[in-house]
Length: 289
Ligand SMILES: C[S@@+](CC[C@H](N)C(=O)[O-])C[C@H]1O[C@@H](n2cnc3c(N)ncnc32)[C@H](O)[C@@H]1O
Image (cartoon, rainbow, N blue to C red):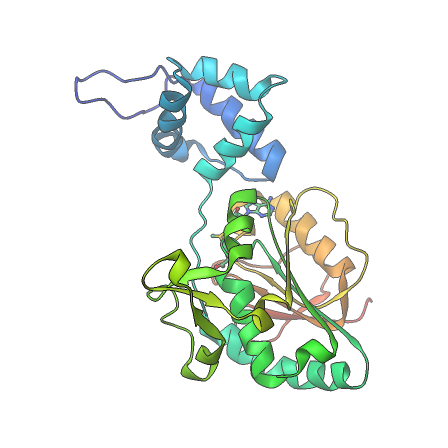
């Protein structure tokens, strides 16, 4: 590949040399680390997002940057590169039909299971800064207000330790919380220490959720099975083979009849017919054939 179409600086020339080989190295490292596929059309985006990193590191070329991320001391920078190249866009009650489905079609049976002593587990896989698992927790508490007295837990994971830390803190602006329904607002507490109009999710909500760093394309440590998995707007960045591996691994950790919610532009494939479409981008685990 010839030198890529990288943006120019005001002076006319490119600030940092950026070749096709540099792009391929960065794409290969990102794919190896996180399963994320970068087509050539993303070259300009890669240049502009990583140019900031080169400036911070005082480097003068992408070749130097590539040597760092491939070297023994490159682990921290690979983490920073991942954060720079991925999007963490998320919001409370995003794709609200999933939370309506959870409340009306899924939670009644799970609440009965919990009340009769059963174990209930939900997972937000690729939770970003937290609005998704908190929306799940608020929905769950709406149906099962005494969840704390039962064996009910939500796991929330992401590959990026920075977003996991933000999610765990559970502090958001009023604007970020606008989509929270009036009936759930009793779980929002003012947090003056965090800022004049900052709010914290109540302990009752926070105690339901365990936040962990987890890479979906590496082995998963958990042994128990899940009743509900939200994995939305995450695998869209993976290549097809990696997506199929993730769907198969979800099947392995889902209870019979468990539910999977995916993003509006994502599709399940290579699941051997196990994940049965049941609503808009909602699936139910069917029996093995
Ligand atoms: C666009 S956000 C989606 C957040 C939320 N699920 C939603 O739909 O609002 C995508 C998240 O996937 C995470 N991610 C990307 N690759 C991942 C991987 N290999 N394992 C786990 N999380 C990953 C990113 O760090 C990011 O926080």
